Amino acid sequence: MGIATSMAVSTVSAQEVNIYSARHYDSDLALYNAFTEQTGIKVNIIEGDSDQLIQRIKREGIASPADILMTIDAGRLWRAEQEGVFQSVESDVLNSRLPDSMRHPDGLWFGFSQRVRVIYYNRENFDPSQAQRYEDLASADFPGDICVRTSSNIYNQSLLSSMIERRGVEETQEWAEGIAANLARDPQGGDTDQILAVAAGECDVALANHYYYVRLLKSDNPAQREAARKVGIIFPNQDSYGTHANVGGAGLVTTSPNREEAVKFLEFLASDEAQEMFAVGNNEFPVVPGVFKDPVLESWGNFKIDEINITALGVNNPESVRVADRSGWR
Image (cartoon, rainbow, N blue to C red):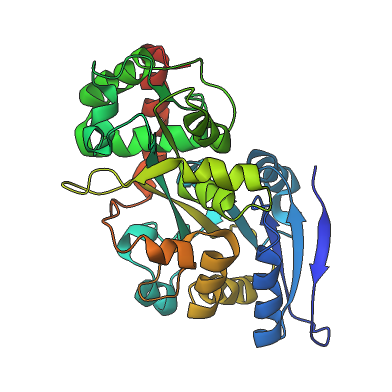
């Protein structure tokens, strides 16, 4: 279900930290190497699907070697919390470095990188002034115009969760029904597929995370770069609460056998060095203010990001699933 690797670039030390990671990015290897170089602590990695890793930790029980669980999306971090996977961390470093919105109130898990869910539009066929808010996409003015992946996708569930937090269940329900009514096609594919569908004219607008677009812009495939140039990007809700952001995050496992080393690793993830690696390596936004961003992200300038506490995305997840089911958004 995953691979086990050892990332040590300095002399092997008796100190180690075992990380169960659902982040499958080659750029994360640089994080582990940098941590070992800085601390001498050996990093061991087990990779797998988030839910599988959670269940593996539960099966292993008190004998689990896991010190840290890393994954993407606050909804998945919340699921791990509900399964009793995390223990509380009290760290002056994390408290001072990370914004309040990126810290679980009880220190059970933390957000270390951000990905924003934005609106994409076809530059030739769509006037971006018509869709400056998420709410606009539910308008009756856009029948058959929208591409989006299935509502069972955790990214969409977290967007719904954020809207529940901001707008309440009733208004979020109406919005989801509007999205279902305006679909250009049955939900299918991943985020990249939605952006490419906009470029191909299959739909005029789409919802997807920002870094998929950046990957297309930087692609070695000329056709993908050309497709990206046909698509514009909108950061929604700048006149209100800001654009929805989700996270890549981590927490300390309840049965961690190497607690001191694991806390040092979490603190390292909040350092400028690690934050820049997140930003440049995977085109994510750093959560620590003032850290260098990827040049494409820098070119977008400053925009308002919704600063609700990320735990709301998990707490509201069950209701978001019920909202989507009732709306007909499959």
